[in-house]
Length: 241
Image (cartoon, rainbow, N blue to C red; front, side):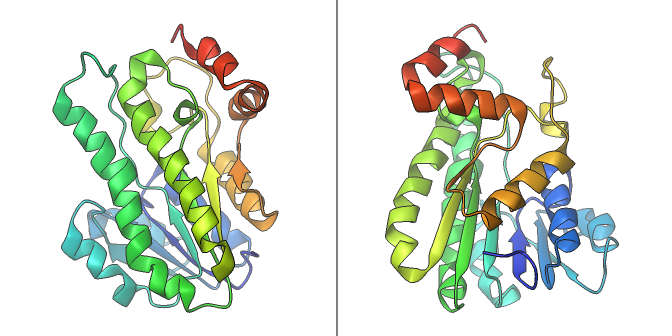
């Protein structure tokens, strides 16, 4: 799948990785980019990047009415990037249950609902791509963030299921496993972070190269290599966090 001349939809596009994905899609020659956010006003700066090619769309991935309107608002998409997400620190044994539910409602069920809503649009194209943002801690948990890890592990698993189901339809499914990134979501994490611009570039390059699993930064590459050798080794690597 080439980004040039494609029509891209990015959820959670008002800041961070999402905004960078819009910018990089445009640089790589996308014909149009639909940028979504819960509040349409939050997308003003994103539209200004290129008003002729960026279309703002209001979308709350946890609201069924909002999700059900998406295909009508973006009827020509062939690259869907499920980027919208939330992050709740805390482990699964002590974190407030409402935080854990929020992680799953946005990061997993929101992603799944958007994909289901957009599947008829993607299926109507000659070829399509779905990009799902998981995390390196979706492969093995950091105990201090194990609620978020569980939601991202569900994204990892559902991406595998989508990939097998959609391959006959010429729709590729790419799961992304970033490490810490310089975004508002990760601002309180005291560890080295990759820039959102470099992560967005690596994601789209991975899509063009047909990578089913994309590790878009140095920390994620290290974690990915460890996971490929031994999932237990990665679990042990993260056990102290």
